[in-house]
Amino acid sequence: MKSLDAYRDEVQVRAVFDQLARVITREWTLMEVCGGQTHSIMRFGIDQLLPKQIDLVHGPGCPVCVTPLELIDKALVIAARPNVIFTSFGDMLRVPGSTTDLFQVKARGGDVRILYSPLDALRIARDNPSKQVVFFGVGFETTAPANGMAVFQAKREALKNFSMLVSHVRVPPAITALMSDPANRVQAFLAAGHVCAVMGYWEYEPLAAQFRVPMIVTGFEPLDIANGILAAVRQLEQGRVEVENAYPRAVTREGNQPAQALIAQVFEVCDRKWRGIGEIPQSGWRLRDEFREYDAEQRFDVGSLHVNESPLCISGLVLQGRKKPNECVAFGKQCTPAKPLGATMVSSEGACAAYYRYARHTFAVVG
Amino acid sequence: MCLGVPGKIVDIYEASGLKMGRVDFGGVTKEACLEYVPDIQVGEYTVIHVGFAISRLSEADAQETLALLREVGAFEEELGAPNEIT
Ligand code: SF4
Image (cartoon, chains in turn orange, blue):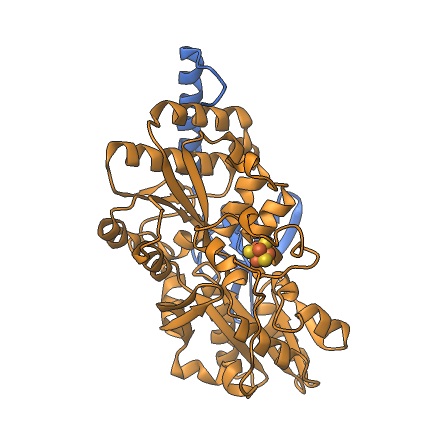
């Protein structure tokens, strides 16, 4: 296997962009769905290498960003309970709820722990039988096999003190919602490579046909992204509409079958609310009835919460590719990674955080 | 959280009824669950996401992509293509 350096070789990346400059004849708007790709694009300055005719807009693919405020507030209430060990991936800790965040709950004495894998939550539950261990199960299709396995194992081991606060989201319904919106400008998608590593890309074929939108399965290294963009522009220029795999070393059309089987066993599709966007039909996964006893929302009654979004934050429009982060009046002023107003500034994969971190502060730079 | 990272399998074993392994990420080794790549062998590459291998990395496809891109690069050089971007 070639080292990653090969996929970061600037000469090769530039060669792809030269090729791109030669095939492009008009303006196109492309969306990268995944926040991890947004981060790569900013980090390696791909946005600055692009021909001016390409407008690359950022998509809703950051699970931390789209987790609804109600659920963050629920997490905060549960995490503050004395008998609870609340576990989560690191990015969730700084996401602002209506009044506080998980870091502050931890600072005030709550037992909040950052995990590398959801299986670690099971170990903590085994080691602490007198405590309730709750895992904040957020993520797209990429994370569902891992979170689903934690629940599956908990049932197999008959663990009584583990539960999961579930906020799983699915990409295809989000694409349907974006493309059905009259304000949509997106003409081609860079589909998230690791979502497709799990789910394959067969699900995208009817979407591409229905909305006449090319979709390119794209990896995360600079060369992968450059290649994905080139493939998208080629299709657009030639009037083709296909689902194309530009990340074959990790993705097959069928995806990861054992992972899909476990997802289907543990989860069922449900409607879900996305922070900043609203409810998208069929866009989520919740635990099936057989696993409902592991649902933290069932185990902990937190009553009804009154949520409070910042009136300045336009992260919903950012997540839908309708505005760039630096078009928000609060960007870099009232809202910074140290004091974020919205989730897209908190998560390392959020578009606002990526723009801030890599200093895309002015319009001139993003052009 | 969402990024998967490529790593090399250096050891495979079982823990709590699950197929687990140690994965080398260029010098740093971590444990990962290998249930979703049941046939994977020590020495092979995989994408790890939140402690789970989600995909086997194909060496052949990796080489092919790079070869293709090298061709693009060579082609550019032959043409003496200008480097600036319009
Ligand atoms: S800069 Fe801050 S306030 Fe503005 S959209 Fe992004 S997260 Fe929201």
